[in-house]
Image (cartoon, rainbow, N blue to C red; front, top):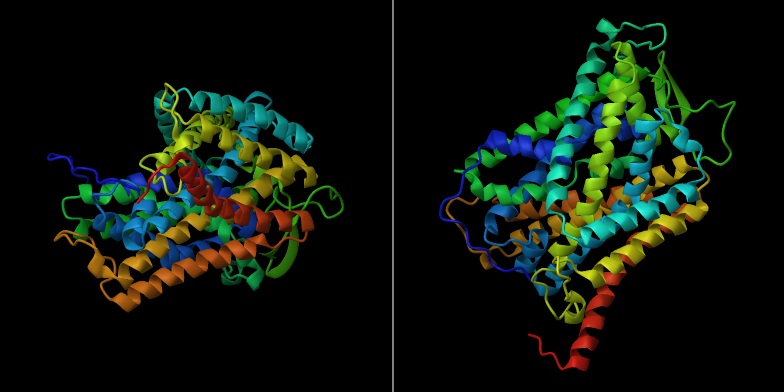
Length: 516
C-alpha cells in the first residue's frame, strides 16, 4: 500500500528545539482554552490537563517517535506502520480510518467560517439567533465552493493555510499575555471587570466522575502527534534528542494550558461569568451542559450556555481589547485570521487526506476505476463521495438541533467522538510492533521509547483504552436523536471501509483484474 521512499543523501538536520516548536504550533490552538474551560471549568481543567499530559500525551508522542524512526523509509504514516506490523488489510483499514474520520471535521468547518465572518463584519454574536438549518444551508454553499477549489489544485492554499495558521497561533499566545496582564493595565475596569483567582485546592479537584464524560474533547484537542513522525529521522541523534523535543512540547503545551486557564479565570471569574446560563431565563430550544463549580468555598451546579462554544473565542479578544483601550481591533483581527485559516484548512482537508488514502492504493481494497484523476491531479469520483457524505452530515443532523449554538456544540462533540478512532490505530500499530519485533529491520540510530516487550504492550493498551473510553463516554446524551447519531455515525463510517473491499473484489472479477 505504501511504497518505499528513497532518503536524500544530503538532508538538513532538525534540532530538538525545532521539533518542539513545530509540534507545539501543530497541536495547540485557542479552541483548546475555550473548550477546556467550558467543559471542565477554569481551575479544574488545569488538573485534568496535567494528568492527561503525563499519562496520555507524553507516551502517545513517544510511541509516534518510535514508529516513525523504525519505519523511516515508509511515507504512508499510520497506514504504513500497520501495513508493516500487521498486514495489508490493516494497512488499508488504517488508511481508510485516517480519511473517514476527517469527514465530520469537514462538516464542522463551514459553520465556523460563518461565525468568524459574522464577528469580523458585525462584531457581535448574532449568529446564535439564526435558524440552524439556515446556517447549514449557507455552509453547504461554502463547502461546495471549497470542493471546487480543491478539485483545481491547492498549492497556493497550503501556503495560505500555513501563514494564517501561524497567525492564529500568535493571536492565541497574545490573548494569554494580555489576559494575564489585564488586571494590572485595565483602562476600562467599570465596563470590563477582571477577577481574582480562587486558589482553593478543592477548586482544582473534580467533584465527581461526570467531569470525565467530556474527556474526548481534550483528547481531540491534543491529538495528531503522528504528524511529527517524518521529522524524527531528520534529527542528528534521534535516540537522544527526540525525547528532549517531546518533553519540551509537553512542558510548552502544559504552560500554555495552565497560563491560558488562568487568563480565562482573570477575564471571566472562577464562577464562569459569561459562560453560564441564567436559570431564570433558559431557552427551551437549547441544550445546556451541567457543570459543578467551586465558588466562595461552596460547590454549585450551573448550566453552561453553548453560546460560549460558538462565540467565546471572539468574546475573549473583545474583552482583552477593550480592557487595553483597543476597542474591537484585536477581535476583528482575530476573526479575519480565523476566517482565512478555517477556509484554507477546509480546502486542504478535503484534498490531502484523500490523497493519503488513494496514492499507491491496493486494488484489492479500492476499485481501480475510482482512481481516475482530472487534469489537476484530483480524484473527481472520490470528491463526489466526500461531497455526498459531508453534505449529509451538514444537513440531516440539523433537523434535530434547536439552535445554531446547539448545532456548533454538537459538531464539536461528534468530531471528538470520531477523530480519536485514528489515534487508536497508532496504538494498535505500536502494540503490534512490540508483539513481533523480529519483523522489523533495525537501525543503529533508531529511537526506542520502551525496550521491554510487556511494558510496551501495556502502555499501548493503556492509551488505546483511555481513547476508547473517552469516545464512548462522550456518546452519552440525554437527547435520543443526538445519542443515536453519536453512536451511528462512527459505526457507519467504519463499516463503509469494510464494504469497499467487497466492491473492489466485484469490480476486479468483472474486469478480470488480477491482484496479489
